[in-house]
Length: 118
Image (cartoon, rainbow, N blue to C red; front, top):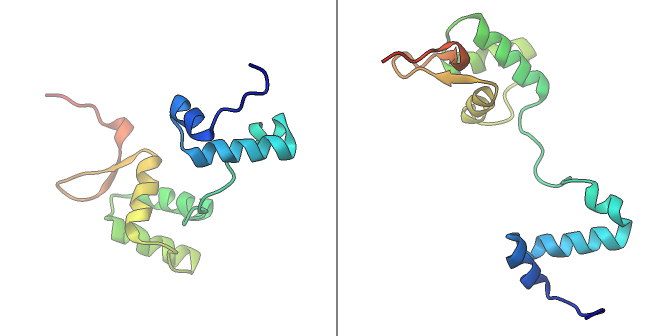
């Protein structure tokens, strides 16, 4: 039937998204048409660590095996300012870049260079 409205919650259930997402799509369509729907997500909290901080941490981590605390200290010394987040956030950023922690020494190492041999 033309002109028949389907409730946003029904659409959300069918698509596996939240009702708020459907409302957001509706508003984006009304405001900007197809371009509004193609814009992508622009919300959310900005990253705690800048790209410069992550790049500096990667350089420090690649230079020698250090603990996460030692890496954080060196990054702070190089950039001359404290980390704007908890140390665990720095660890997560390094993990996203391919580093993992060794259990025995708690040092960082490149996970792609490790080959498992059992």
